Length: 394
Image 1 (cartoon, helix red, strand yellow):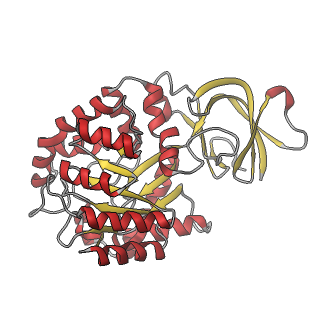
Image 2 (cartoon, helix red, strand yellow; image 1 turned 135 degrees about the horizontal axis):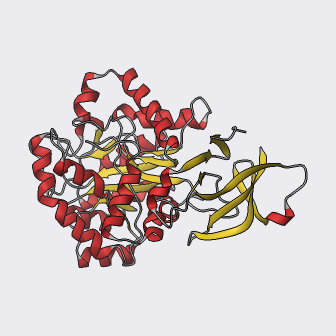
Image 3 (cartoon, one colour; image 1 turned 90 degrees about the vertical axis):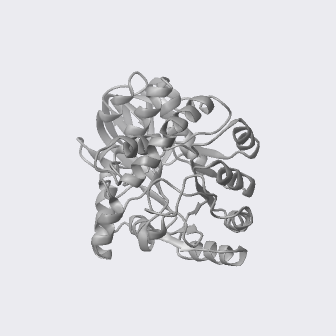
């Protein structure tokens, strides 16, 4: 597969610099070269971009593809059989593509469903974004999100748990370091530290030995501190970040996936389970303050929507970006959280239009750097170089 996209304006490189007069040369799923319009190669198919804006495909670093985004997704999954949950996950992958989301990191699925979907996409059995999945979450007995937990208690079980998930095909390991807002009706508080420092140290050391990153669900301060000290790669949520924790994250190169929109939804939407809404109401302003305080520090921030969670659809990455922008009105820096920063956090050649990067792309009618809602003016979406949209697919 080889072709050139011409007559476009590229959002190029680490700074999403808008460049005119250039064409993008794609070969074998990758960006082969960026060339002047005046030097298009002979005998290579050319796609006319009609003057649109070619941007990196969006990256959602925190999703749950098998959940339905209803008022109570756990209830939905409990009333469906395995086959129905699997079909829902496959269907939701099409939703990501329709909204320009070309890479997702699924960090929590019942019966490792996301691992099976990821394998199906890689084999070409189904269409979908690039999926980096954890499958089950490593959780203490009685801990957060029991519905997709692999319970581990003590260092030996922590070691076995991480090895099991790697064996099953996990490309990221998810741990629950604190309690959460949604998941258990009783016996769970956001401030509770769950997996211990020692358990997380074992998990991180073993995952990193195999080149696999670790994501930590961490809301309360003690759990965040345990995770950073243990060596996790990303803090998910991180409501109770403070100056000391932020400095430690900078020192350890720990990234932050704040997931702002989902907690605003849980705190404000009628019909959300009352226990979850009450907890969200208590911490949503703390979350906002942390984001506004630490966005412009030296912490690498990536966008994650928690898609599938209560009142959080599978296009909610856009809502997450809009929520960020309400707090930090800088379109370029906000967009980088779902492109450049996210690719760096994953440690993969995605999230940039640059030679040698994966050809995950979106063609837009309008410039998203002028208005983030222009991300919804999609003309075409490419994953692994394969285009679909209003123009004929290759």
